[in-house]
Length: 531
Image (cartoon, rainbow, N blue to C red; front, side, top):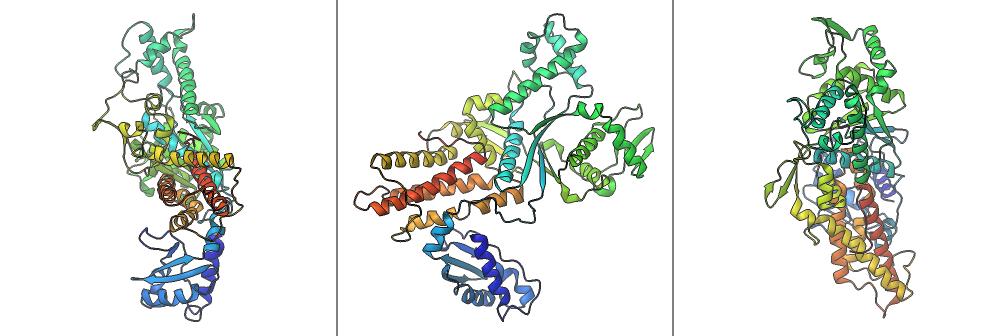
């Protein structure tokens, strides 16, 4: 309904005699007003169109308000310097719009429904348990996949398993050392998890197969970790599949045929400096061994060949240099720059009693994701990870994550869902059911503010897709929870003296509960019925 209203306002503005003469006017965009503005919708259209119309934005806003106020859906339209337009909706339209639960008739934001998106994330080497940083990448990727799907965008999740190369051999040497009670080689894997793994070595297994055995066991461990973290992948794609299909040879031949590679010092190179890389990159070493980069190019071609139209790679903080070369490779494959996007998520610092937590002995060099979830719970992990934009460092406060009060944001939001469940339980005991729609009469200011906030749920999800970050959603849920607490404190929901008002407010509670539950689901957090 907001989209319909936006289009109606835009149509009226563009046809007005003061504005119709101008071409290429900016589109009308709705944004939530600041908390101190008593309105439901804000527009910056007057300011964004000022250069084209060649008038003071405040004058444009004044004229726009006269036009917008004529609409039946609008109760009041005001303007503020330097040119903000603030709209207060009629109570009847606000109530009707707030109850609109549809998500899949989303605003496109330049993204079309025929898109098929593939988000690859985590993709940790199968040489050890998953660490906390992998958990952040997992939360980010899984939430984005869920949000894309909720909006009707075809989206799959993929984990790329690097099961080729010499790391299996080094892992085997490290496991052999642990089995003999020795320390692994200096350049090997030193985590104590290999001590437990050594105890599982099948009798009679040749030492030459230790590496492959360890890798397969660790892949199972990573799959178990992801399942426990409530992250599902459409496919676990193995690098070894590319080698079996001779995909690296085929992609190299294609690049040679298109004159996109050259030979130097006995190696084969792809010229990536023309695409903002700091140097050209080797595809095949002078001894004939392919590089990981060649395998990555073959892998991304495989993604496109499977019908995906947009590839999103979620990478760790140490992959900044990887992005320009991969962008160059995508271009070499004949695809547009916007067909590929990399998200670099920054580090996670675990804080306890004001100090950084030291590394885990079992992992060797890092805290495992399993250790963190065992300590604070999956819900806190998922909510905290989703709460920050990926390009910012995350200070994860373990003490706050363990609290069972309003200092803990996930508890604060979940408590609203549990409280509404308790309200419904009490209402059921009195044989009270919600109305089919909230009554437009007797709307308390706190209830009106709550309904106004409900308008923006779908817009928030679209913003998450546009920014490729779910952090807008926890912020929205926290603000919605705050407004519900204010509503609950000021407005009696179950009032025996006014059954109609009770049923109306029960419906408002139902709308809030649905948004809270759906929002938590999209970031992988449970919505408990009691706490």
